[in-house]
Image 1 (cartoon, rainbow, N blue to C red):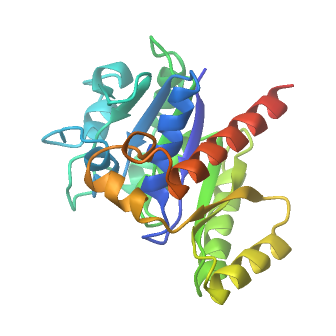
Image 2 (tube, helix red, strand yellow):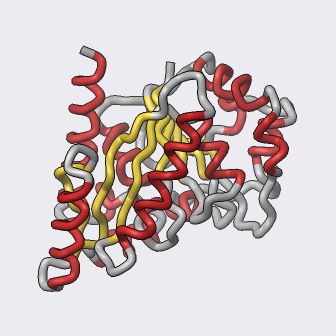
Length: 257
């Protein structure tokens, strides 16, 4: 059975895709089989892992029963790390009405039964609160919320946590919060330090210990179609995502004891 983690925020530019691709890569390097679902119509995770985009959204084919999870998964440069890609398209392949369909739980069940299966499925959500993010929250076991260390961080975080609460109330099983991840931290900016202190003050049990710094190596790795563990393994960004993957895996192990 795959552990499904949605990486979600209604704000753009907070590091969702960077987190999805790099956590996935480090999970795979730790010996886990990982599937990353690029649910963002911009297709940034697809280009960031140098996977050729499909001509149409595979989500529609999956939804219609034309293809299976295993059919759609594509290998990446990292062993045990696969991707369901997305084409860069302004068209959203699902409507809000689709979310009330029996296909939602059916597809989650088929993911758990896929052969060969994945230990983790990460969902890279679009920067919106629309139907694709809502779908991800119905499929997921837990949600990881990246929060940029900038002025409007608390406002965006409050909106996202309310959405998670709403999704949790509509489900038969609890939707966990995998953590609040502080991203794009600059130690030389007083505002970044203030945001870290404020978020930790109000959400002490949810904030992850690992903080992701601003690091040009992360952006450069994406532009080269590689996870940072391949492009710049000794960079600050690489060390941060390595520590984040360790922290998340330790948390998962503690939860299963």
